[in-house]
Image (cartoon, rainbow, N blue to C red; front, side, top):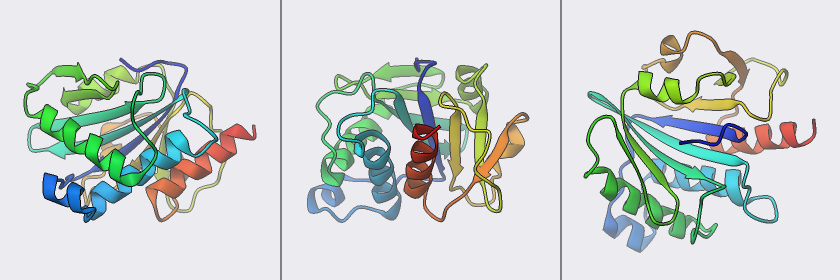
Length: 188
C-alpha cells in the first residue's frame, strides 16, 4: 500500500524488456534505462533518499498490468547507480512471475509488486489529485501529494480510463518530467 502523503510518479510502458545477460553486461533495453534513470532522478537526486517520493513503473499486459513500485519510505539496499537499479528491476520482474492477478507482494528490499487491472490501480489512488503529462500545457496547480503520470505507451491513451485529471507539461523524457515536477513542487 502506498503512503498517502507521498509524491507519486507513474511511468506507463507497453513492455519492459529485461534479462540477466543485459543487466550483467550493462547493455539494457531503452525502457530499462529510462526506468532506472527515473528511479535515480526521482529518489536519489537530492543529497539523499527522498522518503516522500514513490516511483511506479506500470507495464500494460494483455489482461491487465503489472506495477513495480520503488517507495522511498520503504526502500532498502538500493543504490543510485543505473546498474544496481537495473539489477533490482530484474529481480522484481522475475518475482512478478509468481504473483497472480489481483495479488501484491513486497520484496525484502521494500520494492512493492502488484498484478491486476487498471481499475485496481485507480482505487489505490482514490482521493488523490491525478496529473497527466501532456504537450503544450503550463506548470501550475500542482500539489505535493499528487499522482504524476507519464504515459509512454503507443496509441493506448491511458487518460481515457481516468476521468478526472489535470494536464501538466510533458518534457521529451520521463526522467526530465520527474526532475521538473520535483523542482517545481520543492519551490512552492
